[in-house]
Image (tube, rainbow, N blue to C red; front, side, top):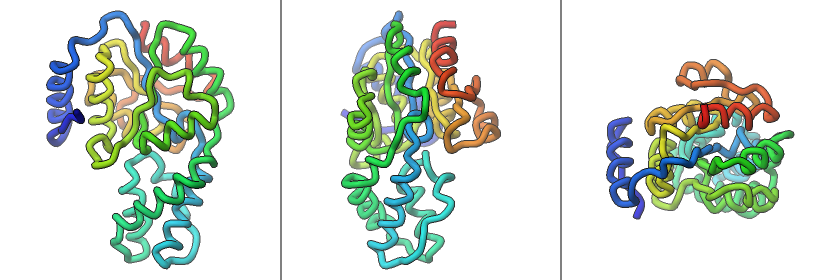
Length: 246
């Protein structure tokens, strides 16, 4: 059963409490590292730009899709809304469908891991920490990307958005993972490159680690309240493990 949330942080905590009652108490001894996908594990910009341009063509628009980087990270509907608003087009539902059609067939294969990420993931996986993907991207797309890159095996599970929109927002998504996996938020960290990742961690009482090689700027992550920042993928394992074991 997918939990339903009210608005704001209070609503998210209500979701967590309700789900935890259904799944049982947190596991007390297992540290957990939850990691975003786009801009954190992989550079997905080439495939996203190609998919946005294919979306525009499908809706009868011409031209390129500039300045897409700032829209990578939020739910897809926000990106498509901004893309179409610039052209006076409000067909967001049709745009999302066109995007997902192209991305699912072609665009997702344009994602490549940042240098040092595979090694960082395997370093974390060799410890007692449990690794999870927590992305606003569709769950099935995230699985296919990581399968294609031979990285899926390092994760306990891969979580993302699902049809119907119940888990589109990071606070709700992380609340769902905490409940289903019986995580202890006090021993969990969310790693990501955008303010949405930090907000999701805050709403669920876990630590937040921002990365500086992705699509979000340092100021964005600091303003959102990140507990720490990491500059290089090579430093990711040490920084993430320090937050859940310190």
